[in-house]
Length: 481
Ligand SMILES: *Cc1c(COP(=O)(O)O)cnc(C)c1O
Image (cartoon, rainbow, N blue to C red; front, side):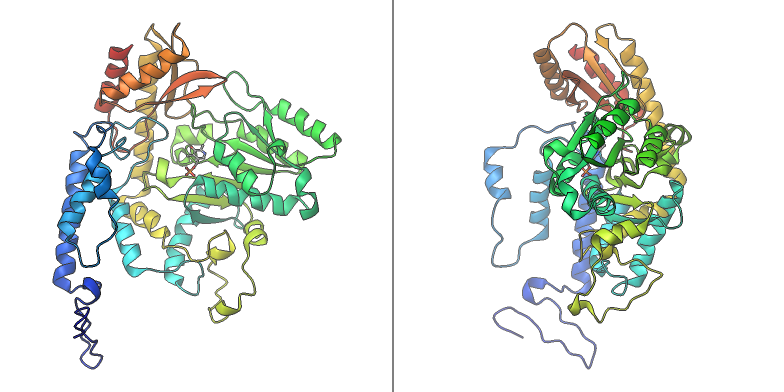
């Protein structure tokens, strides 16, 4: 026993492991079970409470902030008390995991994915290099190959998980730049997107070394879809001016209205112009599992890269993104980690990908388990059915809002976002309206600007949102008009 810390020495001969020690850092079985029981009880209470939870919580009492920001103590704490603090910390802001979240692009938070996280962290596999964790890499590879097949990508395709579509876009833009631009002409490269593209793309371009003038905005048609002929004309003009058009971004489900660009036409344009096509399917991508979604996403299979956010339309916890590329060589060319002497002893297995060669991360978590466990446990049909039901719920919300004389609904949703405006009301009235609706606690909505006009959005995406919640949302909207 170490009197300073209470640590017990490890007894290798008997196989006994140190128990307690270092502030109970390696607890005994009974203690782990007790902690796990308390944690599971917390999760069960949290999930059960979501049905009754308000769409957004009341502001926290001022004294709570100090408690949340407390520095860690020198001596062990009590899990029960810590879970209480956690409970208070998450009862703030909007309830992102609840059924009433219809603002932004809602997330889900499958409990099965939380269990996968627990397992992934416990086994703590480093999945950057296949040699470190071949089995873990194979599980992730299986899911990624399934996704490549879902999007009909060729056998040379590859995927990599990352934290979200912003990181996926960054990798895609760097891969596109690496393939199409000589490093000396990066300053002349131009990338094309519409005003409906997500801001993360311009940010990715900026991180990748492009200045704002190299990001060109292509006009959209009345349905907010890229005007492909206008894109062609802009590319032509830029080329004649000595610029190097290298990448076009197609949005497959915009975060403003869920609009889908004409993917097949943009793919044809990119091929004719010898440019990279990145499809930002962060929100819309998994609707490929449904018949309606697949029809609307036709052409996406011709993209050079596709960004997906399982933390949106696959209901997984935040921090789960995927990048698929048509040719894994493009990612390797941009990110390969060769000649790292301190990794020279790691086995090379060519049948398994070294994910560190396919993106910026070296050490990376066993992120694939978050996808693998829920997909294998629930089966892919469960996700298809849930997404189909989201499409039905949004169609119903669209019909109800379009029938309301005090509202105008300018666009028919491609996916599950209904964007609308208040008839004959000014900008301030729109902002106050969203505040009033959210103050009811029955739904959380958000707004955006489309072509300079304040636009309210209702996005049905969480797997927890049911018909009754959409009905309550519509009632709240109607009560606040
Ligand atoms: C959410 C979203 C993004 C950004 O993805 P993150 O996962 O937040 O990085 C990009 N594009 C679209 C269309 C999105 O909906």
